[in-house]
Image 1: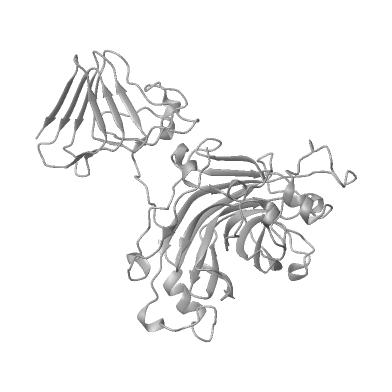
Image 2: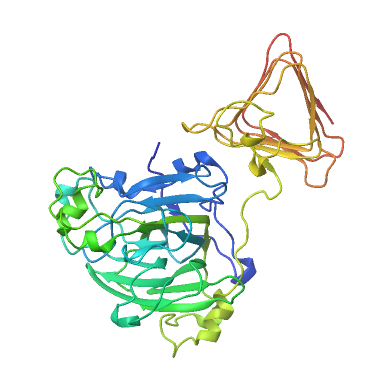
Length: 437
């Protein structure tokens, strides 16, 4: 189900703030099969272990990516989970994360210290077999939300929830912890030349700069994505090599530290992952964005403290069926069946979690728009009529997938809306396909 995707180049030229262009890598986590568009670090690097007990999109929680980790940590030479896309050049990466304990009724417990989730950027390692991995080669930065520790020197006595920010260079990790009021935040990681910036925004708050780093060592191509980790007490009781090579769970048969219990206690839910290119404003060309003497906090926030914009089709009914029943409300976003005025999106249904939809036999259906994405499929059975009346201002018909029609299929487009049939529209001998313009 997981696969490697091509390198995403951020060579879009634009001005900053609202004019920044969101690139196609962005994901609103409203389409289950989008999990296939992400790279799992465990798989890419050939580890015979997984760091995530749960990894899915739009299944455990509607409209979210869910990460529930086994006992694991990103620290020094320890590697953990990362679900990512590769990007090049300067970029802005924004996500919203909510963290709970495994029971879902509070923050992770003090017994499971360093249980946090958030965005992480990492320089790729050049191996696909862990036997070829060299020590002291981890280079990454993250800002995560959850429960860290009440005793770290950077915030002794701080009560949770916490932010943990960490910069690791050649497997030398430097971290800081602060207390926050809630285990939910919008987090933004920005890479501008040699500078890496970590910002956050709490509910009803303003953007705040958490940290600036000068990291000229980082490669042009970076792995940019999401991670979750938990249970440092157990992690620290085993060697780095053992941690990296095994899935650390209480079912393990060769536990080298049986006297220390497994206490993983984290669920991380991500609402979206939005990638943007970044072009340095002309007045700041040649400036060091990691330096407050070059660019003040106020100037930096004026450039980067904008609201993140939704990248999907808001208000559309999105098929997310675990069975093919068109009239089952559980198969649709918002848990409601499309009405006559609705616009419909049939996403890629190619992963194991989704079934292709089939309309009921003998009924008539009229909707405002249809998009069938590449990998999506819609079936219209005999004696069924499916009509799309493109009279609305934003109506459109785009088929990049497959429509199998054994009934009557009709697109009414007297106002000249967008009509694109790049996929397969299959009309058999007993069916009708009409396009009225």
